[in-house]
Image (cartoon, rainbow, N blue to C red; front, side, top):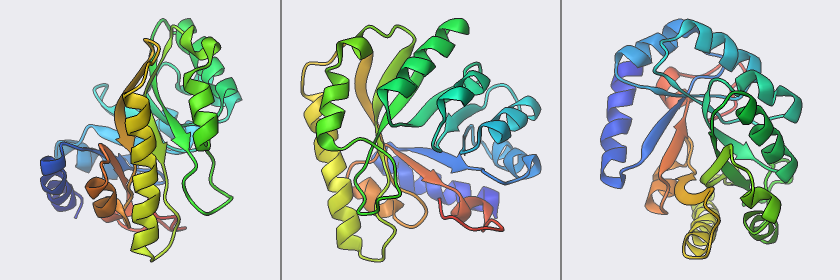
Length: 226
């Protein structure tokens, strides 16, 4: 199922020139290796300990994406390993990523998470806060983080028009920032939006990166769709 599903998604994403993040949280390394053997190199994890553990067992050319909410005190564990952090939701977290990246003599790519859903539980900046971040002189001085773009999650609903409106809102913010004056360490290149249930709408609205879990690896024991 994993190989066939990956090939289907790659085919769907190709016209949009979008990337696939295979969300492998809670899945055993054997499942990841099946995906790796099929040609997948980007894996998304939402738990620091699980990412670190799997990185020790998997080939070194894997790109590890941290897609879950990240606590500042855990950044140090993934700083040597992670290729992209999707869910940066505070300047304090950015500062810690910059600090830990410097210790590891590298630059860590990040996405700023924007709160577009009508659900209070989700994290992220609102539009006004987002603009303050990209214009923050402290952020502009950071030499070991690079902000590649934005990330957002739509409301968990069957109302496709609501989902589309939320993705459209995020794309509008993305385009607005991309067209403006930005510091050297902020490049509006990636727009991470879309999961198993809504990725087709996300692609139509401009996503450059989708996060797919259950549709590739099957349902998890405690299913939280990804």
